[in-house]
Amino acid sequence: MSLSPADKLGLGLAAVGRPAYLTGGRDADLGGARSVSEMRARTLDILNTAYDNGIRYIDTARSYGLAEEFLADWLRVRPEATDVVVASKWGYRYVGDWRLDVDVHEVKEHTLEAFEQQWHESQTLLGGRLSLYQVHSVTEDSPLLRDERLQRALADLRSSGLAVGFSTSGPRQAATIRAALTLRVDGAPLFDSVQSTWNLLETSAAPALAEAHAAGVTVILKECFANGRLAPAAQDPAPGLHNAVRTAADLGVGVDQLAIAAAAHQPWATRVLSGAATADQVRSHVAGVALELTPAQLADLTGRAEEPDEYWAARSRRAWN
Image 1 (tube, rainbow, N blue to C red):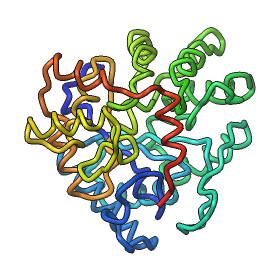
Image 2: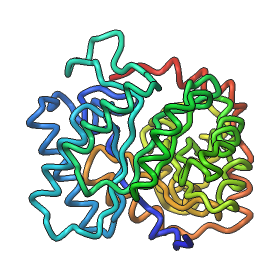
Image 3: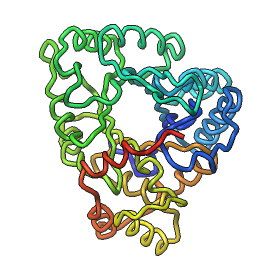
């Protein structure tokens, strides 16, 4: 699939389906308006803004609180949105009980039993609107890579006509991508797509993602704003951020717009996700993804990335808020 940078933009619902999330700026974006009804209204407003601004790809997950339910509500009130591609993920369960002060917000489980339960839950809410179902945050130690029963179940889902994919996280994303894409069931590749973290501070998965793209696999980029580090109000000493801020100022755009434009310009990227928490952020990202960058600008921006271990260690220290 070859899309222009502007057509690559999708909307991820990680930031709006639950009251807490692992990103900065939540107090400014949400304040205290975090009840179920308030977050439902916010999600519907963001989805309306996204659709009205041309976004036709929505990504959610079982662990994103009530995001699948909110999306199902929106699809019912926007019956004309038959052109929206809906993707979801299984593998984490939301256990935060709609609170900010819990120690654990989500629990990971890559087992056949978890897949069967969560597939039933996703299908109940989203039914025939699902186009892609992904294993959430695969790492090199994921049972998925060894569990033949689970692989068979996913292959059966794929045989039914649904695309099957996986997302990745952690400092060894590239190795995980390559390992997952070797999986075969009855001689056929198991996965149609991969969703990975790529941003101006973490570019290490790029070679493996380029290989995936060359093999015909859909490549989806997430966390393009580095969990709030690449946002207009971010305060961070990272050299890569300082460079992005300076370039954004020179171009007269926000650093978030620069970050998402850089992701959309990667020739192997099929989709780039906005994780907007406000309607204004949706509009900003729509404008940003269409920003034209020169090869020299892209090389300069991506040449200041952090070491993967350093980046992911810093990410793990970020608080849910």
